[in-house]
Figure: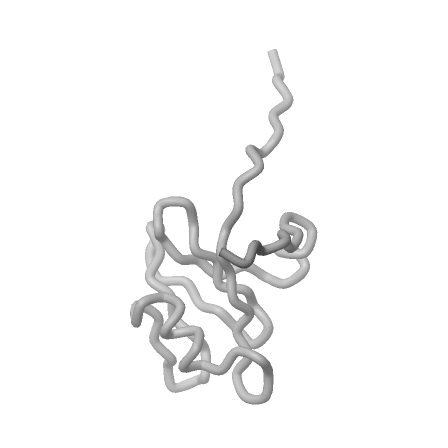
Length: 90
């Protein structure tokens, strides 16, 4: 029997990668990953993930998962899946 499932509502941290002009520089994205991501010779950010190394191109989001892992996500998928949450001033 086929079941339907809903994704649990969780809050994640993410940063959008811009190779050049943009709000998040390469250095900021590398810092976000704790120095785990590296820029290759083709200006693509390489992110070690639980499934192996994946690449993030200009405009992709880098998501920090619930177990502290990082992975890239295309902007259209990110925007269809996530929405901004209001941050508190703690």
